[in-house]
Image (cartoon, rainbow, N blue to C red):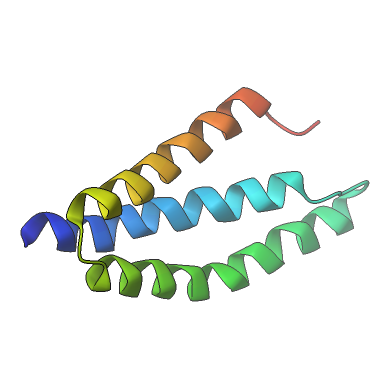
Length: 88
């Protein structure tokens, strides 16, 4: 039960942060003003995503599925962000 709560809280946070960063990185931003907007909306929507991931992690019956999707998704998005590099 402890691993489920750790996955829900910490893994959900890691998943949400990686998803928000990836979304902000992928949105088109030709100038500095557009970059602020491209960062703002994913951060606002990340609160809903975090709540959804956390509730799903506690509701899903199989702990292996929860761990694989939450931790695997967070690591996968983080690796993709690292490969994309810094926006110039």
